[in-house]
Amino acid sequence: MKHLTSLMLCLALLACGKSEQAPAAKGGGHEAAAPEVIKGPHRGRLLSEGPFAIELAIFETGVPPEFRAWATLDGKPLATRDFTVTVETLRLGDFRQTFVFKPEGSAPDDFLRAQASVHEPHSFDVTVTAEHAGKRYQWQYQSYEGRTRIATNMADSAGVKIETAGSAMLTETLSLYGQIVQNPERSREVSARFPGAIRSVAKALGEPVKAGETLALIESNESLRNYAVTAPISGMVMRRDANPGEQSGNRVLFTIVDPASVLAELSVFPKDRAKVVPGAAVKIRLADGDAMAEGTVTRVEVQAGSNQAVKVRVALKSTAASFVAGSFVHGEVVVGSREVPLAVKTSGLQPFRDFTVVYAQIGDSYEVRMLELGDQRGDMVEVLGGLEPGTKYVTENSYLIKADIEKSAASHDH
Image (cartoon, rainbow, N blue to C red):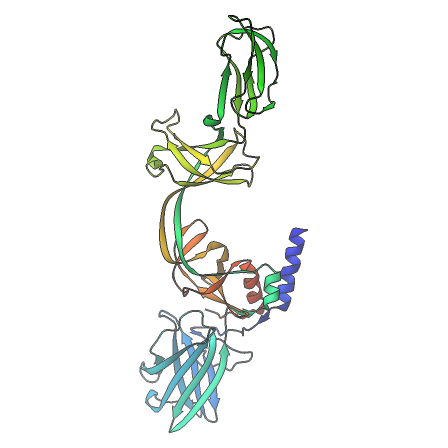
């Protein structure tokens, strides 16, 4: 039922999400286009008014993406000295950038080249201004990629979660394996204070017991008086070596343990032993389930066992009932950390073309942000470029945004 509900929400989201993309240009130039856009010989968008025309493309073969422009009059190429071009882009969030062009190349293949690169994504409203023979021309069009618009209530219903990108503490962890063991500090061996005959036994093996409860009555061999052997702690009778009619002697009659008080005992090999220190935080997960607990390293043994591994003892803050002694566990021990100025959650990452991206949220619009990534630690990854601090981005169910963008079939060809 849970999977069916998720599928229905996904379908509803994809049906209601209003895409803002347009089909892409192909070839060496890179240009967003509306349907049936007229292309020039350089595979750029052809903008014309009367006999004058400008071809504008984003070129990125062997160079960072850049605008290039060519001009014609009555279909014949114009020399770069005979016209000027300026391009202004408006991105989501009202970010404007003006591109100034200068001549490049040599006749007959000369062109005007923008003096700044066009950073990804190539998604914006474009205003093109050109001048020729004292006359000014202007065109406007939309060039969107990796962008979609989804109503806030639909995104909320589909479980799309948003967080703000910023600094984060990246932690380095070491994976260790071991078992849950009883806490020796919550285990007691009970013997008779004075040797004598065991007259009665009040608790059976496996029975719970409270601190102060009678476990057995002993008749002292010296005083011939009965006295009670009581439980020193609350817990469970894990061992019983006492039966009525027997002599108590000096042996252990009962072992009482607190089954709720357990430790994790992990194994670390000598090459990594120096990384694990008392006080380090640890996350413990059952090997055969999803139950998890947090704890702290309290002791690292100084002697290796027969398998050359050294024991690491972890005190657990709280545990589920499934954490019983003998259970196999997997531990992630924090062995280092550093703060980075910008990081995102790995749950928000998606592939887009040849990039790894997150989806930035601006109002009810979502758009890709191509990332340059650094170190990954746990569920966080460092961002070296492609995203501004303070950007709101999708952290959960980002695949729904990806699906809506792909549905529009409107990303650029590269």
